[in-house]
Image 1: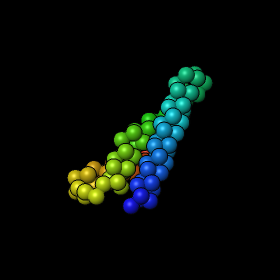
Image 2: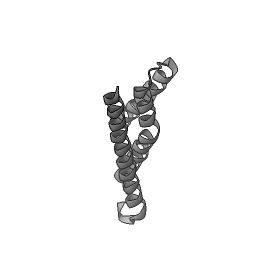
Image 3: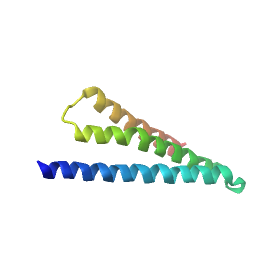
Image 4: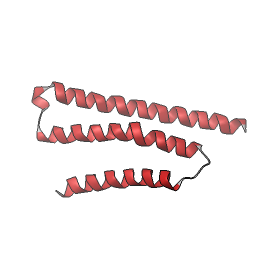
Length: 99
């Protein structure tokens, strides 16, 4: 029982570090592209958009996944929400790649 609590705490710490690094790195990309005039190209606008969407996934989807993995309650609405976020992101990336 104590091991399970320590394992959950360690997993939560790892998720928190990953979320923090992801948000900070993506914000750095956004700030650098926005503040440097020479970097304002169409390609970098795509990278900026990708950084915004990655930050939103880190801020919205990852905490939901942590909560879901820590809880014993299975909710079909929660599962469908997380699945729709993943499928929506995947479809947008494929659509941009094909276009």
